[in-house]
Structures are given as structure tokens and as C-alpha cells.
Length: 340
Image (cartoon, rainbow, N blue to C red; front, side, top):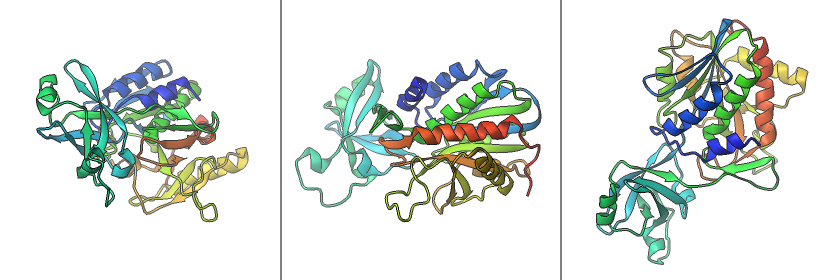
């Protein structure tokens, strides 16, 4: 898989701290579009200028993360989550904390584990502490204070073979990577394409809401990730390596049927595998976009991943490539409208 994708996954960019990711994406995508700008909220908008239709393509830059909630006299740093995290998955993970003298490292643990006590219940977020080996006085001298981000320090890797990627922030750096790859392939497209990389999706879909003030698309596509349910292979609907997922319904939104039917038709004609998603869990930037400006027809295509919102998410390269292929096919000659 692309070296650039691995860099995107490894780079830190929790909600509200997307600047490093934005710089990486801007540097890469500006070679393939006519104009790149950053709006006042921090969303990156890369514009391939063309004629009708105007299509908005969206992926969020931010990832879930941690912030300093408080520091005890002994130097134990208590954690606040930025976005949704399962505390048990963070046990033993490394973090990097910015200071006046560069980053210092810490380990996520609990009072019980630190003191070799028995854990009698599953830890909650307020039970997690970060141990840097320093006292509160020493941390204060370095400039570490309440509200500082603690960046999860995990390297992307391949698992059983080079088709299986493991790492943090696959949600939604995979989507960002796919948009960049589409920008490369669609340089000769006659459509008006806006590649939008949003901020603060994980804490409230905020970037997609604000981005709509400067964009007026005919329709939109959101590129996301979604959790696999293939542990029980007799009952799965979303399988790793089974193709990108087309959202029919999530917890808060019904996907546009016209766009979904186009994906189904391309899948049939080009023999590109897809999976259909109906879920009662979660939602995406598509919710905000679909109800903006009197209503924007919006579809969602997602990469199925295991261990979503952890430092060890797992994805299949085949699903990523198939998502690029089917979207490229759709956008080579996109419909003007997708109204039901």
C-alpha cells in the first residue's frame, strides 16, 4: 500500500488538532486540482473546476484521541476522551505529550495495574492515567497543563500479508487517501469536483456543517469507514475484504437511493464487489450535508474495518482499491441530479 497512506495513518490529528494532517493533504493534493483553500473553521477544500454537476466529495481528517483532564500531585495525568474511545483498548498504549522542550512519552495505565492490584472491573475513562515518570512540579515546569493533547503513539503495520493494514486513525485517513487518489484520476473530468477534508467529525460533525456555507453542490458523497461484523461468519453483513460498504441506513440518516442504485449498477456491470449496510449505530458527515441548504442528495461509501476507534484498526487493501474504482467510474460521467 502507498507509503503516503502509512504516513497519513501515523500522523497525529485528533479533533481540534488537525493542522498537521491538513498540511500533509494540502501538499499532496494541490498537484491535482485547480485551487486549494482552508475555510475559517479549518476544513480543507480542494477544487477541480468544471461544469455541471457540482459534486462534493468528503472525508474527515480528525481522529479520536486523548486530552489532559487533571494532574495529581504525584504526577499522574488523568485522561479525557476526544471523540468516542473504548477505555479498555487503551491499556498499555504509549502517548506523546508536547512540552516546551519537545515531546515526552507516557504509558496509559490504571491505579490498580500500577500498584500490582487485581482489576475487579472493566476500566472507565476516568480510571485511566498516564504515567510519564515525572511529578506534577516537573510536568508544570515543562509546560504540561490541563487541556493539552496526548497523542497516541502507534505505528501502522502489515499483518498476515501486505494486503492487511493495521494502525490507528484508519477512521478516516482511509477516506482522505481515497479522495487524493480520485483527484489524481479525475484530472480530466469535466465535472465540478470539490474534495473536502473536514475537521471535528468525531466530536459532532462540525466541520461538515460549517463547510456547507461556502459550497453549493448538486449532490455529495462521503467516504468513511465502518465496523465489520464478520467475527461470526454465519451472520455477517460487512466482511473484511468483501468490498466497500454502501450505507442504506445508519442511526440517523437514510442514504440517497438514487446514488446507492448507481453504485449497485456499476458494481454489477464492472464486477466490483460491494456490501450493503443497514445499522442502528453511529452516523457520518453525510447527515449534516444531507439536510443543508434545503437538502443535498448524499450517499456514503465506507471501508469495512475491524477494531474501529482503537489503535489497532484493521483494513484490507482490496476494499480500498475497490472503493477507488467504483467511485472513479461514477465520477467519470456523474449524473446532474440524484433526486428521489
